[in-house]
Length: 451
Image (cartoon, rainbow, N blue to C red):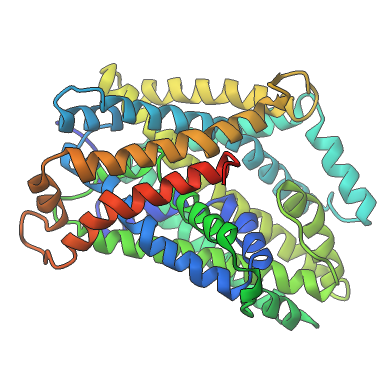
């Protein structure tokens, strides 16, 4: 397609695509799951799942996106000759839009807490910090304002295009994110008693390893790499024909895993130094950790103040790299399918996400009656996308690439038209045809509570 944007460098490809995967889940979900499921044993299983499911799954979306060089819906359509496979692209676009809507709520909380940390409003005893979060999240206006503000910040990046907006922002945000993470990790690991947290994270406990732990690791690998959202397919449509898809997938998976492990080193040593056992979910970030930082650096309040600001800045940057990718999926679709200028297409997606963000924020705060089947709208959106839409989209993509599109198309994209080695191509084909579909079905059944 003429006048499409594209990434200008290999570094831009890796940082932008890794940024789409790195998000708030890396900060609270991965460390918590690691600690509760065998520490280093879980990490080893997780790395195996990245190799087993993550990299082949990423490659599948890369192949579809780069070959078609268009938005997700049209990409599947082009490779299927107009058959119903186009619906897989529509599913990914819808999934990413819903996720953007409720993800922006939590991202807005992070933005508000960054401001509150700078102004010193989240310092105090445990009851004060807990009541602060409850008061803020249940306010009829504040969470909506911060959530929509985050969507608008995302809009300002996406509207500038692929190279001037997404790539430039990723080259700025990802190094800052990594630097902040390393600084906080060092500060956390130097605290008295921090070794207990490091041991908790890295000492293997194989007694906790079970079939359920294996499925949890598979699921974490699946969600961490943004499989099933059409993000990877959309970003791959901006890849150069010279991009080595296998190397890019491996580099992205390595960076995403590294950041997740560093997040564990940031949280657990500090928590254990003050005798706190971290829990999961929003309470970890907005209730537990402010107290942890305050107690851990109690003798050095200035250091605690700076660490708290850096932590919430880290969360904001991590959230922003993810929301940019989710916004771009819909923006690309509206630009190319409705033949709209990029600015107008981006505003459509921004408006839809802002409305959904508003109702989700109210559903977990001031208006709990905004619910679906007994769940708040935000929890319902989370459950729908995580348990059904994401696994379904990834499964259909693997079946599409593994069984439907011509083998020569897959081979050409894998080897860049024969210029790269095809030695691992049979391994990839076996994984995408058999291993990935079986693994995704197991995750799907596990998420639904069947196994």
